[in-house]
Image 1: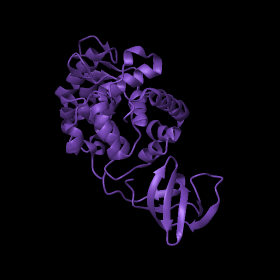
Image 2: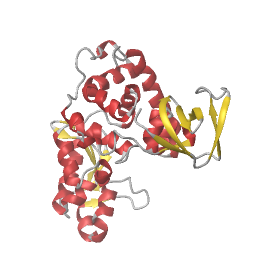
Image 3: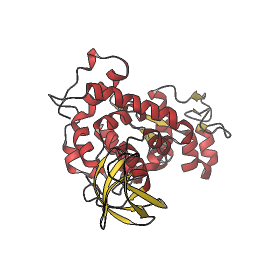
Amino acid sequence: MPYSTATVIASALNVRQVGNINAAVVGRLPRGASVRVHSRSGNWYEISAGATHGFVHGDFLQLDATPTTDGFLCQDDVLCAAPLAAQPPTVIDAAKLAGTARRAGETWNRYGGMLAPLCDSVDVAPSAAVAVLCVESSGQGFVGGRMVIRFENHVFWDQWGKRQPHDYDRFFSHDTTKRWTAHKYRTSETAPWNAGHTGQEAEWDAFSIARALNEPAAMRSISMGASQIMGFNHSILGYDSVRAMFDHFSADERYHVLGLFDFVKGPAATSRMLEALRREEYEQFATYYNGNGQAAVYGARIRGVVSAFEKIAPADL
């Protein structure tokens, strides 16, 4: 259990005898009360405050501290040295599976060697980690030996083009109303326009043109790797520069996985996203990760993968 203390955020919080909404109330704590946290089981936390001891629902606690997981995962020597792929005897025979179960099994086999210590580090169930990777990543980190990217014209406009509009317009265009649409690029003012987002060749062609104009801005304007995290988020993932993120993601797929979970966790001991994942509140996690509009859809997808993986997970997990 990584936590030591927490603060009550409800106006009055019932402390129950066991972790169940129908269990007997053994005490009440006011907003702002500090409690010691002893263990967690699903959504419920075992706590104590003075003579009061029992269980409270995690929605009404702000967890304050952890002694083990401060800092970025991409800087953890154990995780960076762990084998990426699952190792025998934890390899799943995914070829015999179908649908969601097969995808979950293949994801585990691809990343399970590192996911096991990662899950221990951040106190997340392996089924939840596999599900987030299945739902929130592209499932493929490299194509033809190059990192999978997506170059976003409108982001390059924000990062660089609006200060050099003439130069931007020579090579790039996008719809100014629905900025994420109608992306086009060309090699010169007289060359024909090419549609963007038609495959990795087009993504890298557009990125290469932008890179020649301003490399840092171009790198901030791409989503990278299997986790498809935008370069402008580099500091959230623990990188001092977008070039450092680009180099790590280009070198090893493990940084795609660590990047996704660094994005979820952040530099501190915990985050709202990580707490929702720990409590198996997948719709709430999706709200933080994907926004309100698709929370139910993404939450249901995560829940479906969790269920599928739990049926095929290696016995010693």
